[in-house]
Image (tube, rainbow, N blue to C red; front, side, top):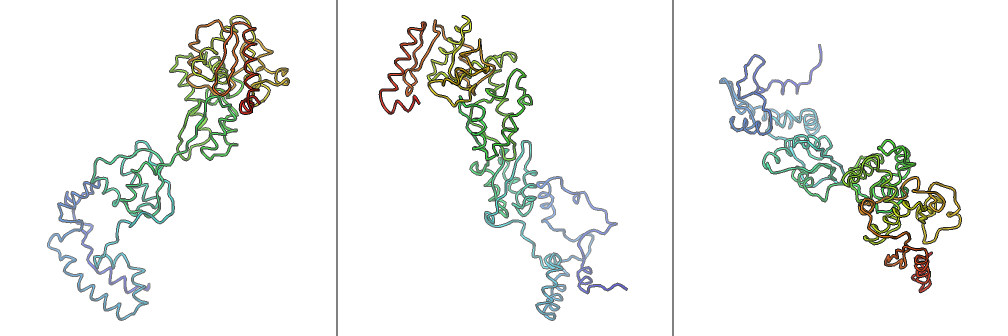
Length: 415
């Protein structure tokens, strides 16, 4: 014979208040399809609990005697026995005594951070389930009832910073507060080289630079044409926000897709993308003032049309791996590479930096003018002199040298 726990007999002997297996439930007892249906169903029955049916004696008539019996037993067995009963039969004791467990936490959390993501297309029930599964709220009902009470509540997809063990109301407040939305952001400035772009991304997102280096190793996976020697020039400069959990490859794809989107909006044909970006990157690195973008563009077109070498220091320095200065070094000028515009004919092999919308527009709409030369004569303000003849250009170069010698402050720009 198997030994049994005498307490099992006590709790098992109590009426459950539920229909027996052979009882046919009425239509009112059908499971609700929503929390709203559950609330309405409970209202029709006069409350959440079941009342007596078919004349059967109710639990409310019997439970006082059961409670008295339990209390007597607890007094007789002492604290140890009481602890045993509570530990093993807490739910039954609570049910018999009407001590319902709270369905909600109190307060704004226990300090343990939890990142909760709301995905596009999710409904309130999805959010309520996610909060319970991640230990933020105690029960589904506590949170979902708040949503049923206010049809105007709407969530913005994203990742939010919450805590474990928050009350349903505090969790809801936190999800509706934009300050709790977690975003990774980075600003990519116009004119940055690809290496500088990924450094800015890494600094903003916290993702290791090595991950970005690996992400740009094969530009073709992002749709960059085979003619491009690398991803240079295909990363659009802007301020970006990324969701937590996204990867370096996701971010690079976003920048490339944004560049393609801008080119499409400007009316650039797919086959012309590389040429346009190459010219735009030169303009981005050479021009300072908005109107000058269009004048530099005209210089490029005039030189190409006349069969002249471009002789752009920005491209020549890029090919030599120099970071950039007013004057190109002798090594850069003598270097044998497809970016040395003092040595090659036509455009360099590809872009040299990240061009923005203004530079792209300047490629498509160069200013009208006879210029073949330009030189910035005030590096602090960006004032630039455009010339038609070499003699005029040399006068501009002399002005620049004089400006550099005018003060120590000016000299810093000329190093």
